[in-house]
Length: 451
Ligand code: SF4
Image 1 (tube, rainbow, N blue to C red):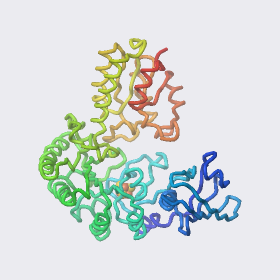
Image 2: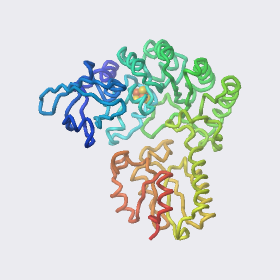
Image 3: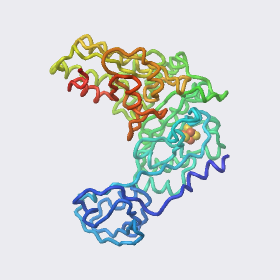
Image 4: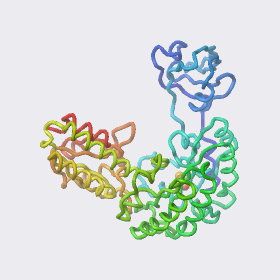
């Protein structure tokens, strides 16, 4: 199993170069008659593996020799002169993620129902995606080539799942041998080369909490500011991940964690001038505690990991209320509908909607939807499915339903259980609007919600 697990990390079948998917009219690409399906093979003699390579190898270059394999099979060599600021007007195929070589006991892939969308089973572990999107990697199977690439192309920051600096604990959590779990040398190399690291700990009760967590945070803090933050997020268990080694996160565990980590944060704040180790929003919500204020999060270094999202939402909602006070929506009293969200976020949303209803006479009802698809302690809005929302249909009030935009695929109106938005609309029999806060603000302002 281990041999197999290692292999995909380095052997995914890859054609040479990077494929062009679109060309902007009147751009350099159009001028040189490049077409979708053509592949850029080399730039100035250097191999191009993906669009990051293309970006890196063309950056700042004004005289270029670009080798292209045309879709027809012809090879072209283009001599291009351009102003430094002139864009090529090319869009490229997406990066195919490398897969991890771990067997983490808490892996989210083990928590999926068998019929879940294939993309939910992708165990990506890719330093390029870490740089581009903040995806976490464990660095356990990173190749020398990738290490060099991070440094040469300045793929900084990198997001690293450390989980524990205690090697026995890390190896146990990742399901691999200690030798491979030990990334201390790799981390040092990256840090010495000026690569910034954001770390993550998936907190598993009775495994890497307590003294192990304390040690992990202080070990990482000793590298501050090169290691610039640590996100501590709770283990999430679905009904399918029944590994006996895992203990579910309870509200009491969250309260104890807040107590312990608050002390560490205070100590580090007086020493480093920053919170450094941030707890996931979920920990505060499950503990029944308010999330910390804006100052706590600084410049929100781990927002992509769900750290500070509730604080940001509340602050932005406050700004929305102030805007609406100045410029109230027309027919505000006719706005009546239901906003569906996960059980975790529902109390936060409800408190905000109450303000909106009281000030503007709207009738917006928040419905906390249970996640039956994943079950377990999954309670975040983004993992709700069409089936879950249908299951709450008897609680719909008013003329429309708003569902979190994050329940849909980013490039398609389809939910995690494969239900399309259109089907959901037909089955609910009312207009359904996917929206984030910005979308919600537009909806109530531009009368789309009124009959
Ligand atoms: S949690 Fe991440 S690193 Fe661990 S096995 Fe799953 S995909 Fe791989």
